Amino acid sequence: EIVDAALAEKAAPLAEKLVADQVASKLTAQDPTLWGPDAESESAIRLSWTTLHKSSRPLIGEIAALRAELHAEGVDRVVLAGMGGSSLAPEVITGTDDVALTVLDTTDPGQVADALAGDLSRTVLVVSSKSGGTVETDSHRRIFAKAFAASGIDAARRIVVVTDPGSPFSKLAEEEGYRKTFLADPNVGGRYSALTAFGLVPSGLAGADIARLLDQAAAASDVLSADSADNPAIQLAAALGAAHAEGAEKVVFADTGSGIKGFGDWAEQLIAESTGKLGTGLLPVVVEGPGAPGFADAKSDATAVAIGSAIEPAKISVTGSLGGQFLLWEYATAIAGRLLGINPFDQPDVEAAKKAARALLDNPDALKGGEQPSNVDGT
Ligand code: PA5
Image (tube, rainbow, N blue to C red; front, side):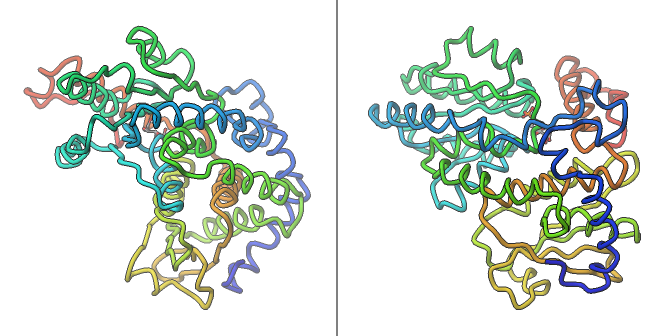
């Protein structure tokens, strides 16, 4: 619901155009030409996330079987080594279902020490990385492999990998004989991967109800695929596009009691990395706790979203199931990307930063001399 009347008025013609162009149904049909006439050949337009509520179904049984095996061995503590697109969704899913998941998403020594302080005899480590080479995630894998071995535990039996086919981690998992590898669809980007193995394996192993999550997404998909001005993804994308056209720079997420924990952090990455490039984009800002009521309206169960500059904030409010919310924001962000004239599926600066981190590790002398790799520019 677009609460702000002025924003609603500006968004309406954009929504009409999106309906006339059949953007929602084309997106569901994974038509890359939505991002330009030559886009068919562009492997960077990665759209398989629109049908994950169907294609991810087989994971439900696979994850349940692995969880049952692990429980039979007394292993019921799940630690996730992963970051960004490989950690935020499982954190939201487990947080919402109120099941425990220990997440290692930084190299903060305190975070690592806390994770190691848990009972290793009951621990399984999920190493989750789409690229299969993120330095921080790999460090956590190494640290845990050593810690397992030091406790007399067969590390290979306690490490589960989620990655893309052919990635360095998929090869490593084979060489090391890790317990199980879940290979995800490379045609789904990290920040759109909530309903792939990246979101489902850690949360499902921890005990979250992932079947219900996919059911929720399936129900939402019918609504979000419709070329209709009532489609909330069309409305949300049009609101984002209209606000941006008016010079808005920020999207503020204020959770006003939705029960969906950490959702703003997930959406923050989705919007920031999808729209924030080529000198344009919307900067997401998450407000939780006492700051949030300032953005709340009468709807106590809403995740309120204020869009705009600090001077003229406009407001929309969003409600719905978690599976539906994931899909709603993915649709809206992808469509908003089209309105902003950018490809919402690539992340050139993230890739550059990863390469730079690797380059520094491969050439530690560069750090001593204060020399910087040339490709970190602005990331
Ligand atoms: O959106 C992105 O691409 C990033 O935030 C990644 O999700 C993050 O860097 C983790 O990457 P990976 O899953 O390859 O380890």
